[in-house]
Image 1 (spheres, one colour):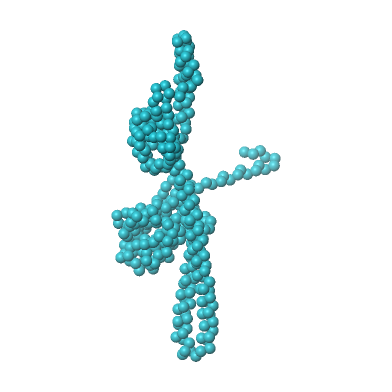
Image 2 (spheres, one colour):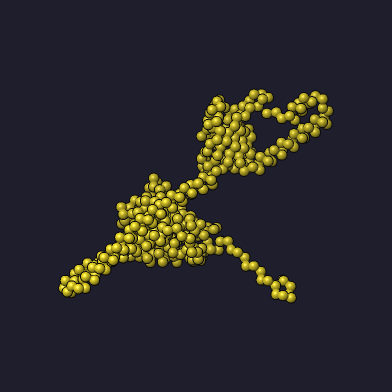
Amino acid sequence: MKSAFWNKLIERLDRLDPGSVQAQFLRLASERGLLETIFHALREGILVLDAEGRIVYVNRGACRLLGMDEAGATGQPMKRYVPEIEWESLLRLDEKEWARLASREIEISYPEHRFLALYLAPLENPTDGRTGVVMILRDVTQERDHEAELVESERLNAILMLAAGVAHEIGNPLNSLAIHLQLIDRELRTLPDADSVPLRELLDVARGEIQRLDQILSQFLKAIRPSLPNFERRALPELVAETLETLAAEIHDRKVVVEVDPADDLPTAWVDAGQVKQAFFNVIRNAIQAMAGGGVLRISFAVEDRLVGAVFQDTGPGIPPGQMGELFEPFRTTKANGHGMGLMIVQRIVRDHGGNVLVDSLPNGARIQLNFPRDDQRIRLLTPPKAAEPGKDAP
């Protein structure tokens, strides 16, 4: 569209002397340079396409989002970068179709996986009647991720509250059974030994089972109740060793060989030792149960700029591709007697620490890496300088 300045310039062009023409064109060049500087400074991507869907103008923001070469992007067909839209037929659409396509989201995988909000508007040059398209791109990946985390967090909290309520209701009849067993024990004391000994053995078995159920419920409630981590400086290899000691009997019964790589120079982590051992317990137990006929569980350690992690790799059957997206969903399990809460609890613990969980399915097994914040990379407050003593100058 023509500007008022451009209209006046054309009307007076034949009356301007060479010096005035040069001044006006310098002014135009200056305005164009200012606009290009502004467009290149924007984080949003701005593109102008011609009637054939080829790029006429592109700013640096669009090049960054779509992986374009700024020098060679002009003249390229837009469908090369965003094939989801029929650019050739776009300008032949009526106003209703334009309204439908004016704002939409697209997913791209190059140069990296992103979600982009795409805004389109028709553009017509009244000078020659040529049409085109103005396109604005905005990266909404973080917004999508944040929304997904909120939905997952709300669902997780609802399920945890339900599980805690069920566990609490199971605890009530267990307490009642324990009381009645005490009453039975009193009655047995009035019987002769010949009659009471066999019954007392059965009573002891029942008491032992009730205590075991009560312990399981206590551990379960402790694991799923959301609580703030009690942070301290701990070495991950030590926490792994303590967890393996707890599972030593089951590891031996299932004929699993555990190999732990040395980690002499591994930085310490800033973690809640109890919660991290609970996460390690769930991952290791899943791994040894996946190797039904025995196998090897290799535990190694990894270091990143801000995180330090423990890596668990088994020689089991691996994870089917269709189940990769359901690993951390509650009540999703491949075990006959599993409850599907183990990995969900692992994910909650790691997220509460500010870490992440990485899962890979290998040709011969699975690999799970739990990353936690490094102690030496956390934000520390500087000690305030000591106040100068009266009568002395501060250094």
